[in-house]
Length: 411
Image (cartoon, rainbow, N blue to C red):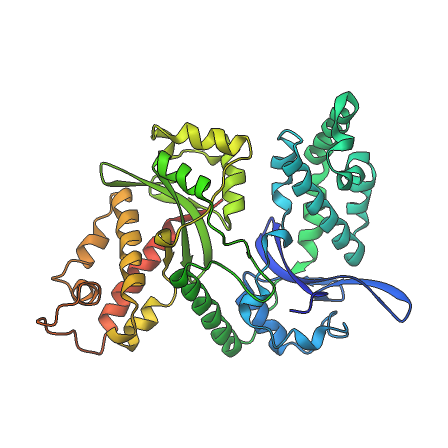
């Protein structure tokens, strides 16, 4: 990826959207900054597959004259996935200012405010500038902890918290109103969606996580302390990739019975490990949560509250549902047995936790889908292989996955 055009994620009232940002550059003696958009519209998309489909086909937008633009349409979909450093949770700002002003909180807030200023500059949002310029603390955030120390520092922090409580909705509304989700070419989207699904599938199989030439999520080194902690408390972070995106949540087992983060059959999920860790530092905002009854839950909350919780998902707890239906349709030789086994585990765990017997019934070896799954996961040369076409099996699998996706409740 050209280093001067960067994929970013914006957490907005209408959802988490991705777009492109061109940080300040000089051309013909003038300084410029831009986002992907056209005139008064800022273009944003639900995922990098939609973004890729747009940049490969669009003929008119504000970045088309950027000196590095020619390289962008040729990028692979994974290269358009924003990394954590370029993810800006605008709707989470009230939660940030409700916390103690430690280094992590101030750094996170400074990054968001800096991006908000850029959006206000490029999109000419005077009302946003009015809010930020009216309170000194917004300007001092880039200096780190030093201005927010002592009695004077707490005065600044409290003033900022009041400003956010009173005026942040004005900021969000102004930005949200200029954001447009444009239509993309369906044929191109089919191709980019396959690229994204294949990337997630390969990442899960290799345990490499998300990594590209731009070193997206490059820190894949194991963290023994973090791993040991989750083992000690008996609760696991898990990652789920569906056709709608990638999510992170928690699950544990008590007497072999699964328990998920959530309640009433709805699993609370987050777009990243970072977002999950931040929410766990504010457990009251999770609402009803079955994991709160687990004996070690308070240890998790305590570690999250101090900012020491490392949420990292192991390969064994990475579940890729996207693409399995197409693999089944192509034939049993195209289905990865490890991926399928993990997917079945997740679907049955969620259904059991919800008190729904449908998954166990459909996946019973006496049923067509159950027989196919059993043959792939537990191969036996003495058994008769299932024979195509597998239309019924694909339909049954998709129904199970759709039911599972309906249980996911993005926080």
